[in-house]
Amino acid sequence: MIRRLAEKTWTASRKELRIARTLVLKLKTSEFKILTRSHTPLAPPSSCEELTTIALSLRERIDLSAKQRFRLVGVGLSNFCDPEDASAQPALFTQRYGRLPPVTR
Image (cartoon, rainbow, N blue to C red):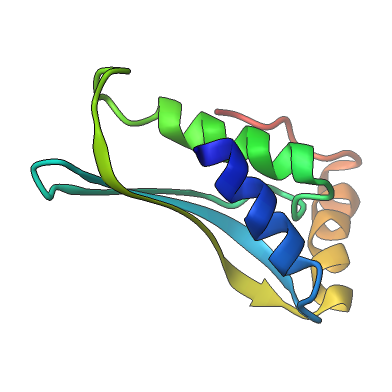
């Protein structure tokens, strides 16, 4: 389910002029408990596979049984910026540290 939603989100994002920096996963349990996780990588996701991997890793950050049923599952994007701004952020880290800092999960 998350994989399919991530693919739809990726397809929709390609029609957008601005670039999303943050990926959001929202789940609503059968008990109506809403769980939201988000991640802002150093650089915006550059492929459907990368976006899907991030979405699946967000699910792993939710401490529930793998058998937990959900009433609602959503994958979304936020923190939009113009294309020229998206490429400037990694350059900031490269200039300061001489390389990109390691990604921690």
